[in-house]
Length: 337
Ligand code: UT7
Image (cartoon, rainbow, N blue to C red; front, side, top):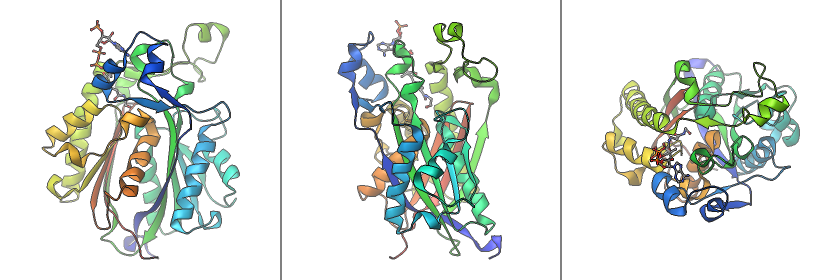
């Protein structure tokens, strides 16, 4: 099959979130905060927290198993695996390799991680799509899986109230129908602003030492106000640019699926695009910010609740540490079974 003939669509989605819920009321007994502050400033009521033996590869494998089942495929059908995560199980090997083994995927397929923080799922989606358009891969698994509870500083009220754990998986499939699936995408990054949201310890530049651990260098740190400002501007621009690239208008988009960081970011982006907030589904109240998992979690929920229907135009948009961002415009396609 020549590459010019192929399009790529999301055939099925699967999710997994840990059982344990951490409510705002519980957090209020851990740090100086309140349910009211967290809800009004972020829209979050509770988040899920993974157990000690529940890592991104475990959560991702569960989400992938559900997606495969829904797609009517088996592990033998998968030709490519990409995992987006900023909280890999271990520094190496990749979470994708660990997940491949847990799921029992074939050994003759590429498995690798993409590191683009909260934009990771959108990045992985584009990498997979471009690889698949070459015709070499028929079905791919793209997974966002995060255990942010492992990098959060539970004594820092400015960040610990925002994040949660979970995973979402998409089965991608090629088709010769050029009018469905992923119509266009864009990615971007600005490493000059990396210090706005980062973790400085634990890498090769600052390996773990008793001193670095004591100094809290292994925790996520964020300049929330600045990140917020960038997020609103870049997510709005990314939506406009990907729509222009595809010759579409925001009125034609049935559903915007934004990275779930803060309900006020969603409100601001919707307002700048002149689109009703009812077209921006959100699960922030129940999961908080799950980074690379947030988009597949929100997309799966919108599909499961019957919001997203065959033929709908869907715009996915993300923003995160790096700084990184990305947007994907797709025509939802549910092939007849
Ligand atoms: O995934 C992509 C990356 N992440 C994001 O997109 C997050 C972007 N940023 C945000 O969502 C928001 O900036 C936050 C939710 C993090 C903060 O909201 P804000 O409206 O920007 O609050 P602020 O940082 O300006 O803080 C306002 C006040 C401060 O007190 P003072 O200085 O006014 O006395 C904070 O110390 O609220 C205080 N504060 C809190 N109070 C109670 C900060 N965190 C808390 C808290 N509970 N948890």
